[in-house]
Amino acid sequence: MSKTLEVRGLRKVYQGPGRSVEALADLTFSVAASELVCMVGPSGCGKTTLLRCAAGLLEPTAGEVLLEGAPVAGPPPDMAVVFQEYGRSLFPWMTVRANVELPLRSKGLGGDRRRRLVTDALAAVGLEDVHDAYPWQLSGGMQQRVAIARAVAYEPHVLLMDEPFAAVDAQTRAELEDLVHSLWRRTGVTIVFVTHDIDEAVYLGQRVLVLSSSPSVVQEDLPVDLPGERDQLATRSDPRFTQLRGHVYAQIQQAKRGGGQPAPPSPEGAAAPGS
Amino acid sequence: MNPAAAARRVLLAAGLPLALLGLWWLASADSQSFYLPPLRDILTAFADTWLGGRLADDVLPSVVRLLAGLAVATVAGVGLGVLIGSSPRLRATLEPVLEFLRAIPPPVLVPIFILVAGIGTTMKVLVIVSGCLWPILLNTVEGVRARDEVLEDTCRAYGIRGTARLRHLVLRSASPQILTGMRQALAIGIILMVISEMFAASSGLGFTIIQFQRGFAIPEMWSGILLLGLLGVALSLAFRGFERRALAWYHGLRRAERGPS
Image (cartoon, rainbow over all chains, first blue to last red; front, side, top):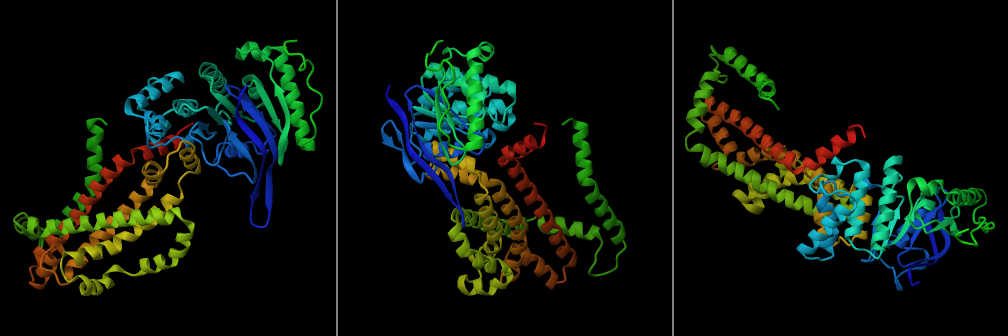
């Protein structure tokens, strides 16, 4: 499979007055086309730093990010980002429709095409009837749907999601997880999904990358050998799901204690998928 | 709003002014003082003085100069404010100078403006601009600086740059502060409008009031002061209406944030 996103030797040191903080030590991983990769790690492990570097919003201290072979020097046009703070990433002075449409204007798309993309994207996230509402008139979950619609309408090759559901309630979160999963299966967009929620990472991902504590490295690269179709009830009660979740949990506990230790033995059965 | 509630609001807003007018009327009814004529005389003078040609000859030019001064101050203040607010270095360089210039009371600049621009319309507009610029400029700087960094990231991630970013991000997120600055500027502008017409003028509301005073036309002078007050109220109401429309999103957002979430 071709590598859509490649991160090589990524290191980020924040220089403050009198002291410097190393957030990312040395990160190397790649994401194949149409893959859905989740990244988890202990809180404060530099997940957001990694995502901002990958999005071209933050310049790394060393290392590089390649999108389809080309180095990322600024935000690339084939990448979309969904931020955690949905309330602050939508323009409060624009209607839902205008919010989704604005990036398409900057892309220089014609009116007809823009209208079709906006209508389709809003329909895909189940917001057909709120085109003319303002974001602050909607619930948190609906606002994050708008942000997802904006990303989908942008037609990115890679979609980066930074703890997108950290601020919504549990039921809404489950709905949004299923929405992202179904959008991914339908469009085949490559998704990098950053979360601090172990269940969410295992539930959504084809692969889970476990980051160590800051300064972070990739502590483990774990394939999730669950059936492709995910279901809140069936998947979460699958013994394999519980096993994987337990394994990631143990990894993160170890990361908290010891930092970037080598990975412990793989979870039972990981070597023989489908067991 | 139902009609009863609307009527109650109007009554509440108009009640005190009407009561004060009534009090003035009664207290001044038998006034023999030359300088404090009965309100009856003032109101008669009001109709005779202003409802003829003076409204077009003296009041309209004043208001036009005020609006022109406000417009120039808004364009300059917002333009400079966006530049200064976007660049910490520029702000650090200019801040002491701006503080100094802002501290100079605009009326003392009138003699200088007369030297530079003569005694015509340009001078009067300049006086208004010199006072109205500062609240707009300083509020714009604050508004531009306080823009949300997540929105800034959103713009960068989605390739919203240049004029699109200026229009949709910078100006819109600073608009509540810009309008606050404009509201303060309006109040300052009315004062400066009158002051600019008290020096070397041949028309205008301020000039006319001074003329009446010098000619001992005291009820007419009082009627001019009443008219100035009414003009101030009308302009401020008009501005509030404009603000309510332009910032509907802002007030809605604030209500949504305050409400149960």
